[in-house]
Length: 196
Image (cartoon, one colour):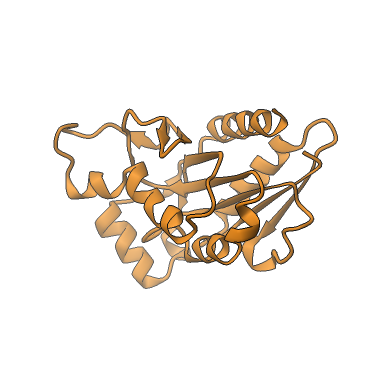
């Protein structure tokens, strides 16, 4: 890989910091990595691989979904990975979904109370449910890996609808839950996959 793009959507700025850490980790042996917000990303032809990320607020961030849908033809011809920041993830035994390797941040993924019968909230927060929209919106794109990471919650930076959703549906508590070792670990594995 000569040039990798890490592009991201963010609601309050914390996903930018995750994207920047992924970018730092991917820089290795002369690999050029650029980190840009989705709204500033135009031409993908200059990149050999693309990493797309965004927070999970009422679904994966709308900008991330629109980006992969709008660019799916180009993305389908390159190695692509997704990352998701969230406050809730139901731990399952899945290490892949439809052949896509899944990384579940141990700081984020929590076991269900009853694995045989997930509650509405637990079912909503599964890898399968979270990944359904991006896989449906951009069916031509098959990510080589998807990383799910704990995020950061600052209610003051959310609009009213997102704040209500996060508080009452997700039950999110304000705080910084990001697991930098987990983020770097996933990015290191991704770097090795891209090199191979």
